[in-house]
Length: 300
Image (cartoon, rainbow, N blue to C red):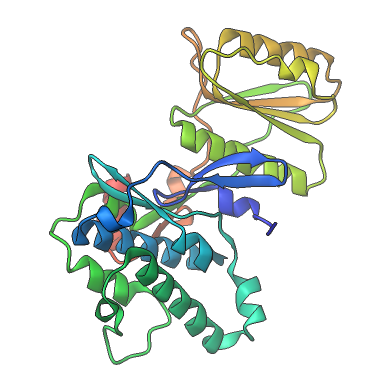
């Protein structure tokens, strides 16, 4: 199984899949999706713009989602427009390009691989992916703008949102014998952040465990299964019993620490995790195929 760097999990973009922790590490979860052949041409165009935008934004972070993840993508047809979701997690782009010999030639080959994979996945005409300009651009931006120009304007909310990505920073970790509570109402984001923290701690060599809480279930795992001295992460929709179980675990865990991420029962109002420095938004916000000032104003 290919390594997923922590930075690939600490990202917020609509085309990235949900993440769960498998026996082999963080893994993508495919959503229930519409058959691509049943979608209108405009829906498939929107999916193509979204996939190219994701690939372009990841490249700025030296990440690559891979041809297979694009070709096996799903399209969720929602109220605000279709949403393409890739079937895998990003990995190092530098590693891929190094295997291709590096330099501009490797950049062209990975760019062309994305274009062909998106065309194949969406079933759009080959002519839609011709070179928009005489200049041999190494980025995907000309194709993003060309395909977006074929869609009704303004773009649907999902496609417009796909033109920007937010990179999270790791929140401050709790001290030994402490529990950090982070309020993240969106379950998809909560699990992604939890897996990102898990992967980061795991790569530093520290013992770390991740447990998922589901509504209506009582989690006794922090008491029964995990040892002490490391970091316990519990993510999802938490009940009072979940929180009490974490408290019991931290009481007997020696120098252990715990992080609880997600939603909380009535009477609990923990802060949101500090994943974006509002004063240094440029470190977190990445934009493609759109005017930066316009997107920044929307984000702020």
